Image 1 (cartoon, rainbow, N blue to C red):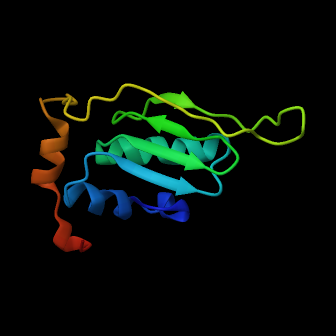
Image 2 (cartoon, rainbow, N blue to C red; image 1 turned 135 degrees about the vertical axis):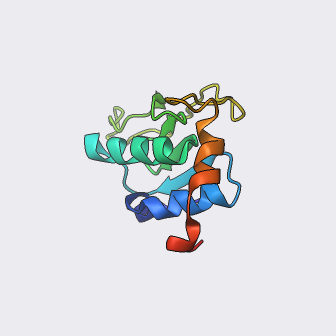
Amino acid sequence: MFVCWDILFPEVTQCLMLNGAEILFQPTYGHAGAQADFQAQCRAHDACLPIVISMWGGNGRIIDRDGTILAAGHTRPDWRGVAPDQILYADIDIHAKRKWIEYDDFHAALIAERQPEAYGR
C-alpha cells in the first residue's frame, strides 16, 4: 500500500514490487484528471503490478499491470450535490505474465535486472 502523493515517485512502487507486492492499493484524497490517470498508469506499467485507487468522493480506478484502466469511478454529484460512494470491480489475474519484447515474463525480468542498491529499498 502507498498513499496519495506517493504516486508521484516511481521508486515507491518499485520498492513495493521488489519487496514482493502482487497488487498495489492507493487510498488518496485527490485523484482527478488525465494527468493523475497517466501517472497511475505509468506506475502500474513500470512495476508490472495492478493498482487499485480509492478516493474520497468517487473517482477511483482499477488499473491492470499493463497500465490499462479496467474500471473508473466518477465525481459527478447526485441530485443533492454529493458525489456518491461507488464500488468498482474488475477481474485481475495477479499471476498472469506480461510478455514484452524478448521477455516471456516481464515482471520476473524486472526483479532480476533491477539494481535496488542504486536507490535502496
